[in-house]
Length: 173
Image 1 (tube, one colour):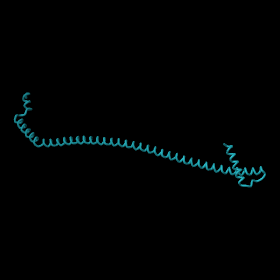
Image 2 (cartoon, rainbow, N blue to C red):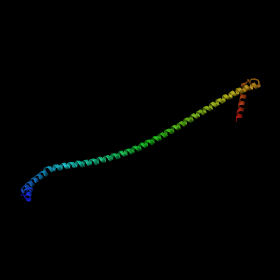
Image 3 (cartoon, rainbow, N blue to C red):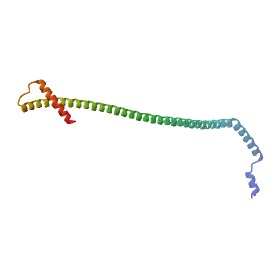
Image 4 (cartoon, rainbow, N blue to C red):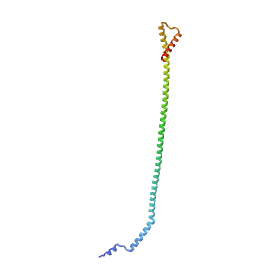
């Protein structure tokens, strides 16, 4: 029968196998270290540089975006101030235009009122003159009927008419 120690020997390699395995492992390690490791390191460094570059670009883009936003906010604030100023100027100009229109309308109304007043006074004066003339004619006719004769002299008629008008004016006062 096979003992436990002999079974263990089956699983343990011989010393020459261990030696040659170590030699091959060292050769493979040196070959890997000389040829593959620099290429892997270059790829890793390149990826790290790309990542760092991407991070730097992202930070720069964020910085640019913040600057653009600040500039936009400043322009928006300036635009609001300018719009407010334009609105205030428009209101002031509208008030000025309304005041000018009101002043012109009042001046026109005063002129129309004055013209109408002068026209009324002129018409009143004309009516008064016409009325005085008619009153004179009526008074002369009435005096002629009362006296029973016609007043023939124009001078007599004029003086009589003037006296009657003067009496009427003095009675009014």
